[in-house]
Amino acid sequence: MYHMRYVVTFIISTFFCANISAQTLNASYETLEQLPNSFKNRATSTEISYNIKEDMNPFYLEADFNGQGELDVAICILEPSTNKQGILIQHGEDRSFFVIAAGQLFNKRDNLDWIDVWKVYRKKTAERTIFSDNFDIEGSETVPLSNIAIQVAPSEGSYNLITWDGAKYIWIHTGE
Image: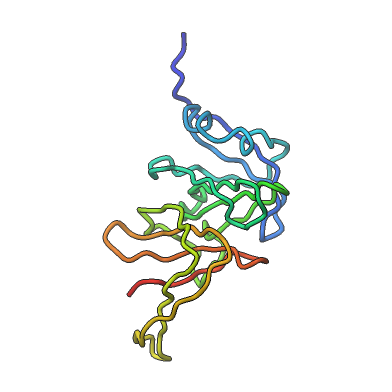
């Protein structure tokens, strides 16, 4: 009997914001087996590769992030050549994929390596931080949220939100 802890290459078809048509996800057998079947059963081709960040807890989130009535899946990923961290989201209704950071520019950054904590944010509003031109905090405003968001933070810092605006994922700064 051989050891079950080995790296498995998992291939999924994808629509990706940067017009890359497919991705390979690399993770242990145990990690891949924990992914929802609706996510892992969409295998077809390979062009670029990501590693699943297995030490996130939980290592994937499942909710209706785009408000289309189907469960979407988000996983933390690492771009293997640079080790830049990001999030891969798959919409359940049309199987489209979106990469947030992991080497792709999102909210003026391409690496979310500071994220240690993430969870589903289900509230209908958020307190968006308002900044002055020189980036001093001027206050906050309550903004409505149309969809469930992903709440992200460093282990000892304030939370921020990633949410679908109907066309793309956007960043809402909610902390200091």
